[in-house]
Image (tube, rainbow, N blue to C red):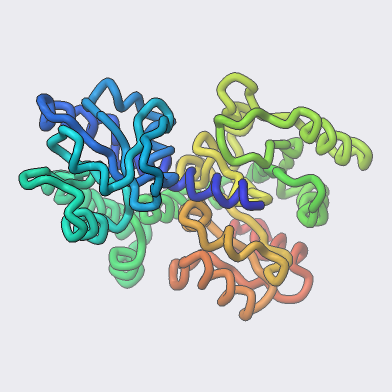
Length: 374
């Protein structure tokens, strides 16, 4: 469990670095500090995400890494760099400290107050977002809100989402409105895909069966995916085979959907589903996450037993981002909705839907009504 939680936090940082186009930021830093010697400050998972995914040596002349948690007098190697305790920095010849921590001002104050730096040493964040980019991001959000307003014709919701949603969340909601309109206009069975990451807990099987035998839905084979979070992790072939065997025993149609080289889920894109059910949102990969798939499908998940959920995982940034781009998350009652919304920070974003009594049959009823198949 600790490894999974660590992976979630790590993934949230990888995701963030991609979102800010960190490689481009490194090009700017390369020019800005071309003739400078650099110390990286902070040895947490954020630094790991940077060093694992970017060849930072090609951009900066880094002579070492430091962190106040380091107590050893002698330096040691960390991913190819010398590591020093803060008090040892004064003896080094460098010009710039680039902070990889979240609490930038606190770290800067610590280094200054404890006289770890010589006079004239520059201390800046590693990830530097220029004002022009911040302005561009703001206008992109305004553009997304107007896109939602045009599609929804609902100024109240557009204004609400402007203040409580991220840009990508607004884009997802706009896409879902378009998908709803498209599906409602069609008389063809609704193409539906299920993505399974934990065959040991198959609460969704009842829902799959209900939809499979309903003429309004066209069910694809259940797509089996690994439950490890990182693309750098090796796929547990034995566990994948065991998952396949569990469904085989009950004569379910299944498919191993993961490309072993790219770790992508090409089959999901090839199926071109109208609806995608994710068994566990925490295992959604970038190749088929809700934001990406919102372009062509409605995405949802079901929380059958909130009381047994891993609330630490639900509170992670990576989990929150994944579920905030879903179309709907179905729960059994008001208490579960409030609990789930609080931990995932999606209150008032109109994602969590209460289905009273029999949740699976209630979901089918809701889908048929919402998609005008009654």
